Image (cartoon, rainbow, N blue to C red; front, side, top):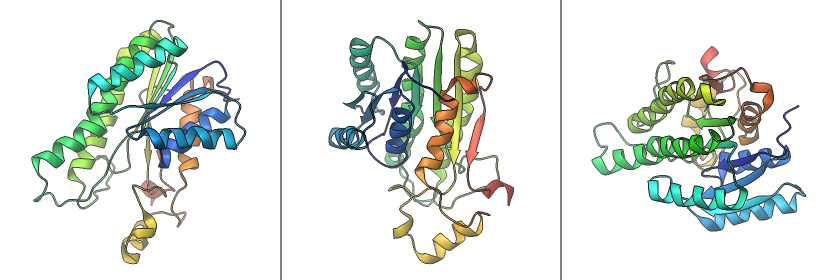
Length: 255
């Protein structure tokens, strides 16, 4: 199950955190993986890590700034020139910063939306155009439990939540439009996960305890636990799933 041999996957923001884990998990299932990040050195470090782990699938590092459409297209041009196709896209690149709603500037708002939402859309758009040529594809957008509509309002995250809620809405529409071309589009929405973005070790003890109080499993999640959902949605075993959001939250929404 979950065999991804002969598939070419692109993971954005894969130089660290969940993106790194997604890339390694896809490699572990046999996919060729293009590891993209704004920081080329981080992408290259993940490629070296994959080699050190003895993963036999091909891993390639590539620089991409998802906030700029010209950078997205240049990266995909390079991928197509080398591999001839894109089968799987994991739209992982994203940022987070805590700012009071009364203090968010236009620059902060635009940066958040450009990376977290606009970037995901234009990566999906370009990937879909390539996937249509082979009538098969998987697009997996990374959202968040902080995305609206589920009763989780995170203080200081108005712009972040707007971007991640937009990802879920976009996922549903793309799923309906791309289904005739054999392209499945889903979202994964993590809860509290141990990544540099969440930085749980740097959080004040009371803030971390508050987060854990909402989580029945009473611990922070691991990036690899989110990657398992990504691998599933990328596989043939998820062939009748599209337009859905899979929450990986330790039971937060059930509590």
